[in-house]
Image (cartoon, rainbow, N blue to C red):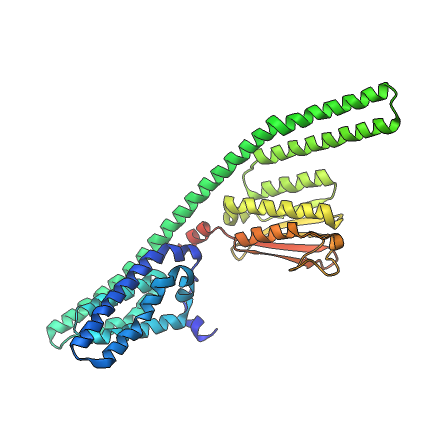
Length: 410
């Protein structure tokens, strides 16, 4: 552990928290900049000379830069111990031109609230301690200066707690907003699935059923009228193909309408239907605690990933056995699909791949790309490796939904 890591906050900031506290961080940084502008004027009027100007200029970037690019670099600032230590030292230095002025308490309070927002109460109090000590000695002697300094120190401590409390409230609001958005997205997705199921049932499924009957009638009529055996065979093959398409459509309708409770039931049904359709044995092992991490949003992604990988096995791997495992690892959903098929190609697909995706020399990387893009969309990753006894092992890691992760942290 290096020096910067020792000084860093215990818990790293995530993107949702960074966006939630961004407006408050920018406001407090702007308050500090305004106070520094007054400090610059005081330094010039009181004859502090270039030393006072230098101290103000030294402190300004620690407020200006975060206010300018917190949305893109906020997490780096919040977890970098050296920057936090530097801001603590510069904050004390910035108080020197303000010594004896009420603005000293304002700058210290804004700084303490800023630290409380992203550093947490304990670390923020440690950082604010030098500000409190300096204020106790920063005013003119006598009881009046002592009381003023003590009041400033107390205000700094109160603002540290206020900033921490404000940060927690903003995080909770962000969690609630994210959960509400997720619920609305789930409802919209369900409505879209039901609408698509109704449209398929009323159009494609009905048309295919009619075509299947017509093709069977055509084959029987050709047989009765003594048509050539090859012609009758083609008619029967056509009828079989239409019936297969109709069965696939009916199965798709069932999957669109069927949304069982829990990811385990969802994946077990998906793997079971794939086994029935392909004849290749596939076993699903789903951790019972995965629902607490996945949530409805991640559950859809997990199902889509498993479905795509199983289809790649069917198309390219030539496997006789497939295993699907879903577990929780370090707060993320870990999907592992392994097979005993053709394994990795001689050269492998660009960026790492397997027969699960390309079938060795068969070529084509769209399935692999889709799985990887879906994983990256969730903030995770996907890897393809050769199995220990042949075949291929695909591992996809999907971090927990931001709303759930923040709720647990709060």
